[in-house]
Length: 101
Image 1 (cartoon, rainbow, N blue to C red):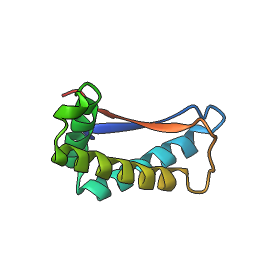
Image 2: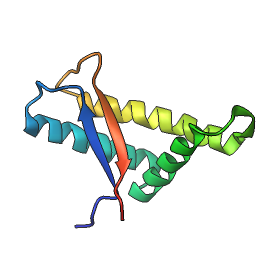
Image 3: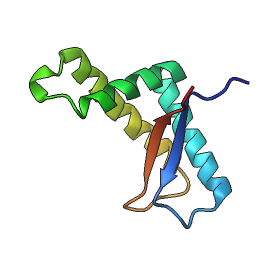
């Protein structure tokens, strides 16, 4: 089994039992990886999206805009899958982070 290169954490849902939390996080990660074609592609997209936060709007390329749009669609699909069967709260969200090498 290969080491994960990104992690997913379900935040602001403290009343959810740990086994259900882990299952939700795993569903989210699977769907995100499927949407991008693999874990490496997820981390590449995540890096680009994070860099966009500090980029002036006039410097954002069309390619970057397309990746950002793809990220948002993939994150929505992953969140739906992650919360399937457990509901959710208005404030809960999934946080994705790259694993340090």
